[in-house]
Image (tube, rainbow, N blue to C red; front, side, top):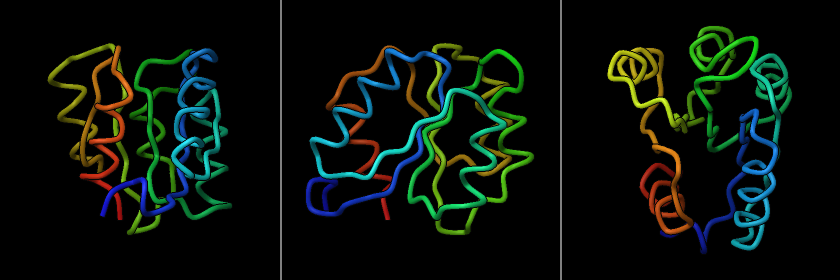
Length: 123
């Protein structure tokens, strides 16, 4: 099943507002419900309030980072987390996976790469 056939509820957590808007528009064109936040604390609140299929989580942000998010978020068992970062550090990737992330995208990424990862990790 492709993302074009299955509507997913996606949360994007990133401090880059231009990236948030571009991803939101692109994913909404593919019929997904998209929520965006620009910090980890707000993302923790959002996942407590709403069931998401996918959380696309940036690692390096002002304030709390992606690892803090993974440690503090009350994620549902069915929620998949994709690390989305320009900071390609093996230790960070390892920590995110140990905390429950199931995949990662290295910035900059294109629409095809995003959709392929959503297809692979989608529910």
